[in-house]
Length: 200
View: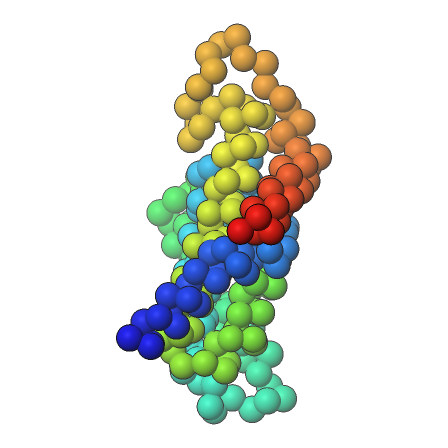
């Protein structure tokens, strides 16, 4: 029971208390750049979650055999292996998503969320806790991206999942799908999350 309780606590921490986007403010490049549609946000979130899960498992497995002076290069090699798998998979099976995400798929290699979890958590904890941490952080990152993307897509395009929701007379706020809209949406959501946390 203690194991299940701690695993659940680790998972929830990644989704809410230490949400990588809204609480730790990590991984801002993809959060701001590709969050113009829910499909893009979900795709990037799933890609990052797969890499998080794979790299956390591998880092946890080799943690007792990794020389301290070489741990960062080893972590980067592990992470880049899973990123390569994601890139080849998306290019083969979802070429539209691969094109939309573009350079941000290879840049997962240097995403500070993934390297931070490998260094701070997976290199110090057993494999099952590392899985809970990866899933919590991955789900938290995916939900944050989808929320940002939904707001920007609805206001900036008048669509959700590519389908019109306001009719032909809607005049979209173009600024919402540009860089200022990304920063505005992110700032308001971070402020809202801080407010809810303080109230609780």
